[in-house]
Length: 226
Image 1 (tube, rainbow, N blue to C red):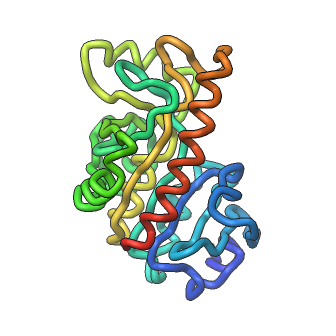
Image 2 (cartoon, rainbow, N blue to C red; image 1 turned 45 degrees about the vertical axis):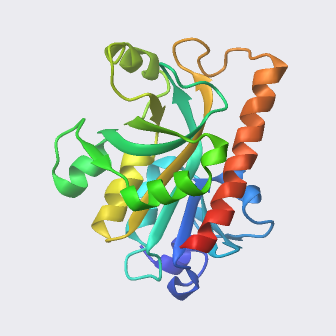
């Protein structure tokens, strides 16, 4: 795949730190962007913001960053919560279990194995923003919203506290290109109590919205440390 076509910019325009997010979240990091075939890229302060048009291409996006200036990858996104995690909580993911095929194909690893995000980046982030009550948690990367409740039942006696669709994919890709990876998320629903699509009262909706914006602000500030 041609880098310029995929990203809409040249490899030399990529910065040391890259923020990966969903298309709808890009305005949180920059008001202007350039469209490639599969992602949009934007010049954020101290980082390149990369918005995924399709989350299943997150792995390809990371792999294509090989031999670019990128050394740090921060994944920003929403997640489904279970157990003690509540909608509107901000989470730093410590480890993520792969319930997807990308990691398995890349490393011939077994399904449901887990990878660990960069401990130094996690500690630095949590220490710098300790007033924000960042929660450290484990994640399961699942490629189906419909199957999340069933998987959550398997962990009712312990296990990953949140679920997403990109974390282990991004981590595996980062490992392959020798980049550090940090995964920061905000909980947008509770799989066991208020699954995605269930009605929330206005107070919880506001908490989720505030957490999304606050986390984006923290990430932009944190890029100054990298």
